[in-house]
Amino acid sequence: ALARYNPGGTIDASFGGGDGKVLTNFAPGEDAVYGLAIQPDGMIVAAGDAGLRTGNSRFAIARYDDNGTLDPTFGHGDGKVTTNWTSGNDPVSSLVLQPDGKIVVAGGVAYNSRNPKLAVARYDDDGTLDPTFGHGDGKVTTDVTARKDYANAVALQPDGRIIAGGIGIPSGSRAVFELVRYNANGTLDMSFSGDGKRTTNFTRLDDSVHGVVVLPGGDIVAGGIANFGKFNARFALARYNGNGALETAFGGDGKVTTDLTAGDDEAWDIALQADGKVVAGGDARGRGGRFAAARYRSDGSLDPAFGTGGLAFVNFTTRDDFAIALTRQAA
Image (cartoon, rainbow, N blue to C red; front, side, top):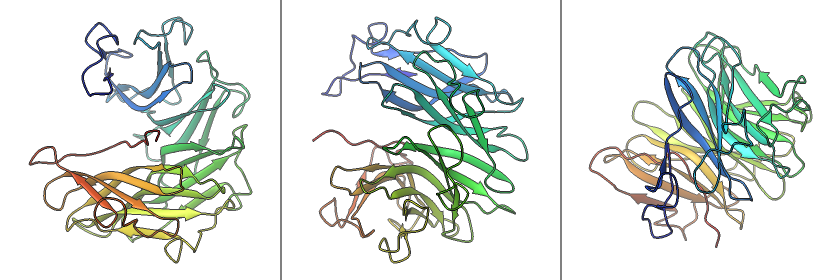
């Protein structure tokens, strides 16, 4: 489902069937969008999961014209593409557009199995899998840890290298921050942490990446959640040098956590400002769920010029409100 709004917040009746809304069916089961991007020509690319909860869901991508109609030049003439990797659930979580028009999506494959893998695929502008990426089929899967790997975010470096960030479980049930960097052709970039893969612990419980940005100097910031115990999850950010080492000028050891409230605080996305500051957005559930945002300076400290002491909150209801995605408007 997509909806488009005018700048004032009213529904844009020129989008979709005159009501500002578009529904697209992929599979007999449930379909969901988890990533969205706008091409320079105004076309809209959405990616997610086709056949959710069927036991065999697939990567799904749809492209729409500016008016919300499916683009017949994309896919099989119907504006839609699905990619089957395994006999299990293969969902997309994030997408990014390359300057040359190619589409990069990231997620996981065999997510309902005992050893799901992080997965990245690249498509040409017409929706066909890019044969110059991966093993000639446009697809790459990566085992980072012993048990579970899944990409929640994907970002591009200016030189064309691709960074996927997410969750890994090395052993037991404890999850860690996980980053993988690929060369432009889909091979692992061995200059990053020696093997193209990097995991980072914040706590002895579950930690997970949900957003990745590349700073102007080439450093990488990953943001997400660090779990310090029951009702004590926190915003978590880590900053890495171009070679994958933690940048100790950031927080003293390359890592920063922020306890916004007395309850769970979860960062579901991060965005980079033009001045190099990083904003993390998500929810704070200390006194009922609220939209929450925090802005950080280059050393990892909270920016006091943002909100109150670097933090901002918005209530919609008296119950749980969650912000899942974040982007920065042009000045």
